[in-house]
Image (cartoon, rainbow, N blue to C red):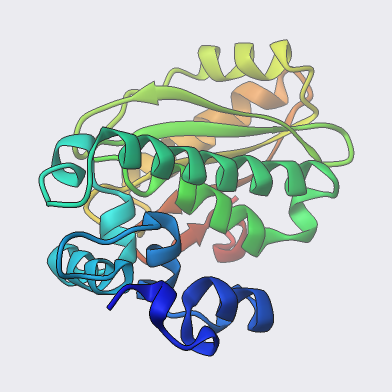
Length: 224
């Protein structure tokens, strides 16, 4: 039976409009995105099958194009739509950070960094470049590495900060292993970057490491 024939109170779109998006299950939210099902399956049924196949909403949303398009009911158009949704979410979070001090909302910063860096299969080193009120000027990915390391050059970090006229920075990188614990190399490069940026009067407020389920803050650990 098509969703349009269901009682209005349980149709995902009508439920969202009356109760808010938080009232919907992952399958119901995904069904609204899919809009239509396939022969013999409603959009909610198809959404449930997809979530089971991928292991959850996060895994589905982080699938690459080839993985995403291999199942019936999905294709390049849906993949493009999903990537647009994800990018809008990232830009919304970035715009929210720009309105207030990033240091007043550390959990929001962590959520933004998780969304931006967690899915990479290799290490990516990035910076949140901040003004003198610690509002975000720019988020810049500076170095891309291998599955367990990325070469970071202090001179390039200093250059990026000066070009943005930043007064402070939050350093960030991901650990593709999923374990966010700082390594000895992480501690060493952080000290080098703090020293290099101090020479041009730019403060390092934090270094955050993005793992699979958590983000470790050097400032919260007392490592800065």
